[in-house]
Image (cartoon, rainbow, N blue to C red; front, side):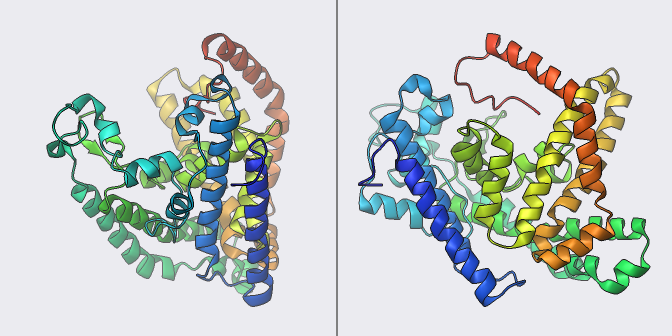
Length: 407
């Protein structure tokens, strides 16, 4: 980052960081404990990789690109000078996020360290001449309520994991006796409930990480619609959004949120073509070397394409009445949850053998349906996308990141 040409610093940093992470993941998986999801150095290393590459891309934006070449978000986060060694180490190795993240942006982190984190988000309430750099200490919001609420969520998730999750082991989906004797609907039902039960351990880790950040005073995002303080800047999971998701995109947007932001910032927004496929492949590579990860993210590609095509081609037909809209939402919720269940099963099974046993037991039904739907609806989807793009080019400012757009 110090010596590389600023025009290529982001590329060198990405190759170096991801290459080192991949080498460590391969050694961990295939030399030490294949098929066992263990807690070790790889988790913190994954977070450091996100931070190093995020910093490099934002440095490249700030020192190499012109303002008009950047989206509003890229412009806000751009860095105009290389960090010092202490700033670099503080950002990449700070104890708040060193274990499970989330990855935060360098500018937001430096605002927190240097005491500007809250005042910048309460700018309308600042008054000069109060002895605190234009910010009144009396206005500083307390994170106590947010921390207590998130710790309560952690407690519920932990209890759920120790009771319900352990009674519905994911590995039973590929048990030879169960696969050979149970009907397809029974296997489908067990897969659905076992995947639902596997989520709280992720909810626990991410929510606890949020609570740690908030307890330190980091994570203030401003005030909500009612004027109350909101602590969502480092939010990594939206449990309600996940459990009620009616599309694959909605599910992904609410799951491991900051990793999704990282993937969008370093890959999706910058790839010249095949953005969706490249983003999913980068996600698989970042997660590790287990075959199950690659099955999950490669399977997600046709499912996402099919979901987009169905939404653009069919959804408008159900918006005529509240009853039709409710029926559409119920059907798409069930379809989304079943598709996610099918997709993430290899992510939890890890090994190639277990993954193939599961997919054969399910007759590859989601693969087949999603590919057929994508092929059948692709012409309509492409026409709708072209019309939408034409309209957007007339109404959306250049370099907009289209964060408002729902696919």
